[in-house]
Image (cartoon, rainbow, N blue to C red; front, side, top):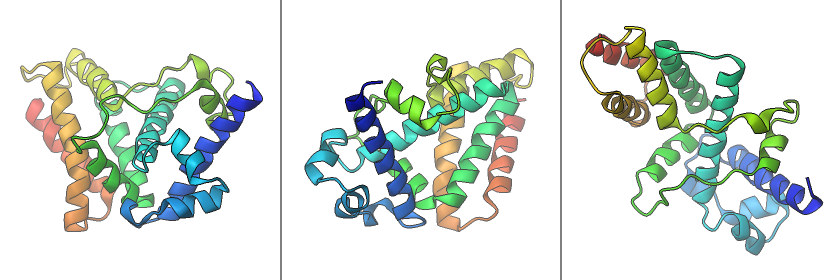
Length: 209
């Protein structure tokens, strides 16, 4: 990769990493651009060159989240119901580590002003995120909805889901449960998250079987 592209990729990843470190369990609204710039040692002008708004860092986080899931599923494929459980287990892990980020991400995704397209992730960034995986460029980033749709179709094919419903409708149900569970976890201060999410998925799948 060229030095210019590598520098840009490293800067964007550094911004993401410091956002995660600075937030901890705090809400995203409590994160200040000045703090990020101070940690990464860049100006506001430079930051906004790559992230036009502070919320774009959340969009970038979500894109990287989907990349990580895509790589994990490439290395250890899962199908049908097991794939669905996998995604909810990953949500549980990240919520326990960074509830402020996950809650803010759900709020961001529901904002009507949010751009419809995912935040771009360039080849240089994929290489830096997975330095020990030389074939990472061959792995396509699959969106959360696409992953749910694939697993739903496989679950129907394997007869893990037997109710008559379109794959698209099942995908919408899973997405609603995914995002809605985050709000429920926060409102009711539920712990442990993994058991709660697993139970929710089991109840939904039971209704579809």
